[in-house]
Length: 299
Image 1: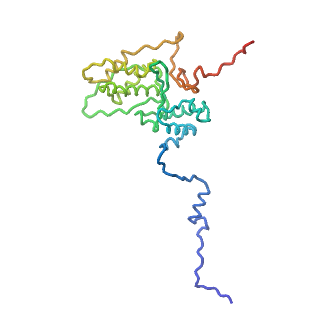
Image 2: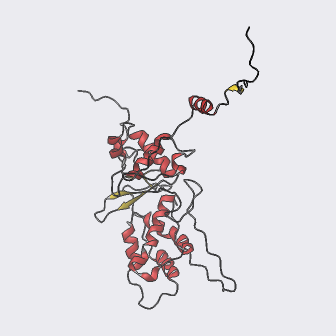
Image 3: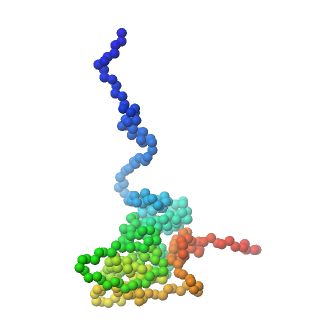
């Protein structure tokens, strides 16, 4: 006759079935979705990318990928629209739109400069942390760069305001950034022309007014540093403000007589060939615009 052995301990029962088992629970969570990172440490040929770019909430996926590619390139590499379109399958229009996104959010700075031969070229700067390299803080693509002014020390007599400087007709962020770069480079020609951030902010519109007149930065640099007095400069910013106003060159003439209400549009980069041209809005230059429909020639 079979008898039950009461000395044997009963089998332990799971508290909530099998779903709370450590190993089974882990596998269940893995199967339910979510990325698993299989990372290895890079020791060569790698680029550090900030999460502010990789997880940007407003940039498109194409713009983020293009920024990563640009940041991985060596200095001096070509990143014009034509070169990028030959490298990637997205096409010139989509690449141009992505470059504008990066420019609007501060990851690219593109300025038009005139070489000594008279040719207008585009200078492109890639920023891995927008707002840190240039010393300027912006609130958006059309915001004017501003610099924090140092607080005046207690007991220090207030300094006289700097003389007013000319103002550009189109104070675009790129133009003002180029102006700040010109001012920052003056001390390389003359150490006495070391400016504070507040002084550079005040003088930048005056330099932008010169650049807007189709002058290269080298010409502005020469005009501000040539013929300075030999004695110490007690306030170089005031001297520069005077020169920017007194020596302001005239606006270059139009190729055709302008209308009374004509305006001089800012320089922009063509979406197709990346050349500089003047227009009120971004787009294509005259050589890259499609031919307007017209009557067919008769044989």
